Image 1 (cartoon, rainbow, N blue to C red):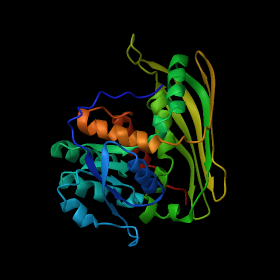
Image 2 (cartoon, rainbow, N blue to C red):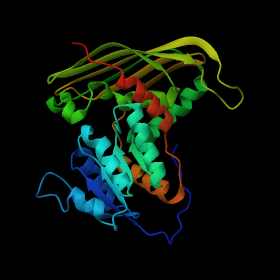
Image 3 (cartoon, helix red, strand yellow):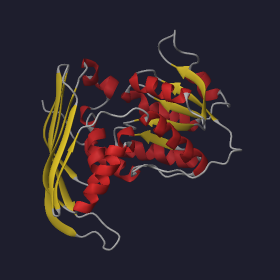
Image 4 (cartoon, rainbow, N blue to C red):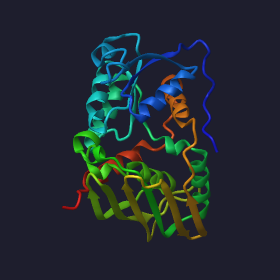
Length: 301
């Protein structure tokens, strides 16, 4: 299953995009930009003087640059997004957008007021693997019980709030994936440990409502519970596994390496949101609800 776009008017001009931050995501987006037929590079903003071609201030004041892609450390996202929107730029931002629902809504409201697109990247949701799982899970009906495990590497800097933001937002991408599959849930934290050596988050995800379908509205059901674990430490091989029992059968989804090209696909989607008003490929309302829950979770002492 893939996302299709409306045909683009050939007379529409290419957008000039500045890349802000050259970490792994920024470098991947720069690589995607090199083959894009929709964007030209408007400049690179980086603390690495040998790589930067412009400053943030010059980027904001340049009327030829219509878009910015923000790939800095997480803690800077809210302020940079706000400044870009205030200068009438379309914004593509790596997740997380902000660390409270109030701040995230404020930024979306500012984008609406400025008549600009604010797009928050969640490229894993664009993969064919994710989309196929989403279709299969919908057909299985109500979740009864299951488990989701994610394991991966870890860097000491991710434990620093002035770099990565609150530790509760580290599992955001995995939790949004589950929400994209199964709709809303309540997070009941059991354990959250974050330090320079490792990260561990254990929780119960409580599904208290059945998903709506085309024939019937939402209605109450017996609670479904999904055990969620995210474990990270240096050198740990990336692994992801989801197993669950539904009213119409069982399902198991195992991790597939992230395919190449998702940054390019996300960039294309950003362009079509700007030029055609294409909706986001996931529910931004769900992202806001998840942001509200994560902002209330504190690490264990």
